[in-house]
Length: 261
Image (cartoon, rainbow, N blue to C red; front, side, top):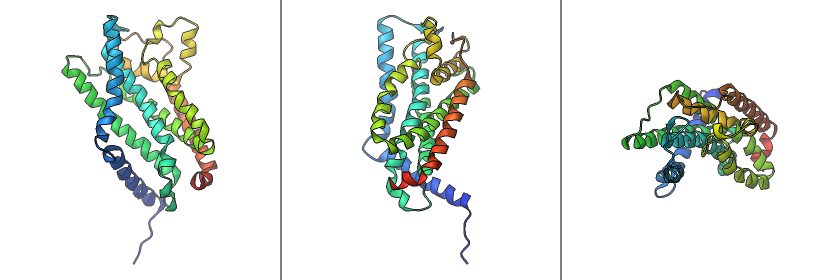
């Protein structure tokens, strides 16, 4: 006798199938696909470390320059990759919406979760590589690091929830959103210490919630790091939760249009 499944079991089955599909696509879709996941953060950290070495900057805010750079870059990539992959999830999985069990929000949530897992292992590999070169990479406050990265992941999820709807309704806006990522990376404090920025400009920069997450991550690795006094982990969590709420509301409001677009 056939036993009907409840909504939760169906949703979990859909997420499992989507997770396996996305994992295979990200890691094995092309030759060396897994390798290119590492290239971007390694490239950014390498050229920035080279620049700081040339100008003889050995430490920033009281901690090793290379560690300062790699933690900041990884923290920002948690937001950017989660947000970007989530934003593109609906368009990339449109064919699957022919199955009534698969909803746009499912593809987005699975992509965000997969990206978080991939970035966790990428971070471990990069920090291990840094340790082999003699750098102290163990966080003194692992909980602070996890909280900071969680806040940035949630912010990326909220960003993806909102922008995935925006780019579907107005595709031309997607190009502008992508162009904003590089200035956002710079203004978040990945390449220069925000503490060096004089007032009132520093207060303006700290309106960016990502800057708070990056500073918190660095404090977790080195408590003696001279963080920005205005740093507030609550600020980025508030931004993340607000953007997730807004994104879910948009997903619900335009659910039918996202499928038929």
